[in-house]
Image (cartoon, one colour):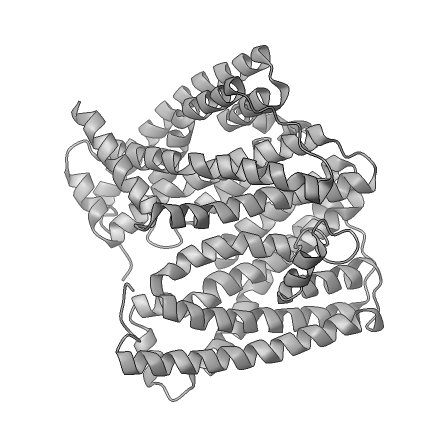
Length: 244
Length: 279
């Protein structure tokens, strides 16, 4: 049931984009749309089940239980990330299966590069979820509006369905630089290279380094931000205040 | 008169809810960002694919921008009755609306109307922004005709599509009265399927047979066609044909929607789902 529920947006969006690619006459890029759908499943999980999770838990009175547990809040979030990745993997696999069945996508993959890129993309993406989680903890119920507002623009800038940086990007240089600060942008670019263009580990080594650096920095930032907000919330008595 | 008052009161409440009970300008900006980004994503996919094979045309770019912008409005509708019932169960508002005689149907109609009013500026801004960023990004302006007549034609098409939108609302409402969690699952599927089957991004002929027949029976397809007839082709004959299907199809769809919603509501009352929520 959970897989079926989570499948709707990534599957139908990627099918629509693949059909749009097909309608332009460029069927060989339908794979870009399916790959975008796979990563969209994880991005949706980061946004709705990671970034906003503490806010929902606070509304339901579960957050207090996290606070009194001996585990640090950031460790709970890391655990949630692993659970989120495992829970989303079947939906992503279905997108691949259905995309493969309907569009007969031809790939030219270097599996070592694909695996490394995928792992580091998810690590940096979920680390970004930790940073957003601390932000949403501070902003309370505005989190949902923020999620609705940032989801699509990040999908656009990060080039989930088309290259948004480098050659083929429709964006001006300044926007490409800004887009490069989003882990999803670097991850998608590297994934396209390694899945469709036989990108060896060497050809995506710079992307892998950047993704690894982003994961470390974002994890550190998320941890510090969570601690700071927890401390501020304790002082001001707003940590478990609902409907803020 | 009492029915009209109920609908208008619900529309006012729905509009405030859609605005997240906040500053209308801030809310409008937040709400516009996502649909505009979605329209641009579709336009870029078309540009990227068609440029590669040398088949890019500004007319087709306009086709995608208009369809994707109107689709944004349709997708927004899909969630409104679901949110009205699901949140209403949480806050005990929905059971109270229910126990007021003959109130749930006008209540959902009002909420859809509120969402309709709320989404008009979103569509307009999405179209406007997508049109103006097209040149810097694609070195071509989409062929969209903006004149008082074409805007009035578009406005008429959107108004005539209201029964269709409400019908979808009642059908999804019929589902939502029975569910206590994951209420957004079915609307997600419905809005996603409409993206594929309503000619929002590509003509029905792109779909393999027999799937290519589905768009022909959906009133939403005729909203897309009427909007394009107004803004791109500027053809009265095509426009009136699409409007005819949209009007009659929408009214039939609305009658079916209300009937199914009433049956579902009766069944939900008998089974104790009207005020059931997961704590």
